[in-house]
Amino acid sequence: MYPKPYIEYLVHFHGDRDYFECHEVLEEYWKEDPPGQRKIHWVGLIQIAVGLYHYRRSNWKGAHRMISNALAILEEEKDALLSLGLNPEKTTELLRKRSKDIENKRPYKSINLPLEDSDLLKTCIEYCENHQLQWGHPSDLSNDFLIHKHSLRDRSDVIAERKNSLIRKQQKTDEA
Image: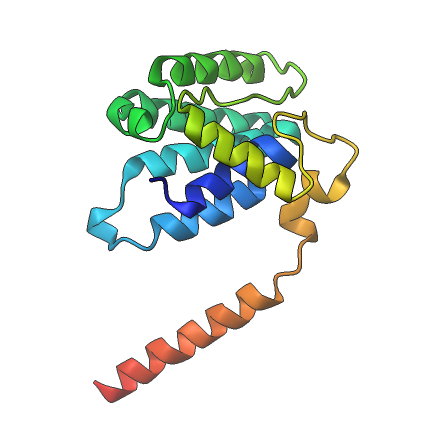
């Protein structure tokens, strides 16, 4: 019923708190639709993850911008949130509270999105168990790789794919 990347997003969000990976899996899914047909609610969810990634790193400006953008989008996407098994009112209220925490530079604290679909919750918890993760466990703030993943991860595959993409675009241009 739900797209696999969305379930993976939820598992990373609530299981290992890998917000960087949340962003990666959902952005790839979002990009599968043609540019004029992409659904904005995915952007809102991606921005929640990016905002929390920044927040956990005490990047107050980036965190506030992302959470504010997510809130603006998701306040307009209540039907989409419902279709994703989320409570829209609780989601937007949670984002408002987190935005205030960021504005006041309060220490990072993990949050759980308000899932209301018990079958979705069960699926996500089982996925966590199968991957040795604990659903709802707080972020491991001592895990430097998790906290600074954007600068510590291996990007060789991304760089290679970008290079191949440029080569393909150039070949198309040369053929035209």
